[in-house]
Length: 103
Image (cartoon, rainbow, N blue to C red; front, side, top):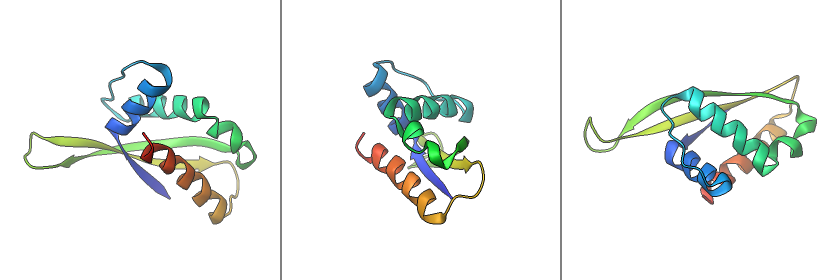
């Protein structure tokens, strides 16, 4: 499963935690920011028993009104090492999404 997060939410989260303003130009930038967020919020350690292996990040552009005005949307897919029940995977995704809804 994947969740989507707007670039502005990721930028605000990093600014709130580390007081730095980052620029997200591509999925690699977003991946670095997501890893930082996972570590700083303790979500990585909290779910260590699930053996989170990686977060795969892809992106697309969402055009609001014109071909010039768009939002960068990142799709996050959490990769676990081994079998993880659907319920546990959903719990991790939900917790991560709730974090961004508060930003």
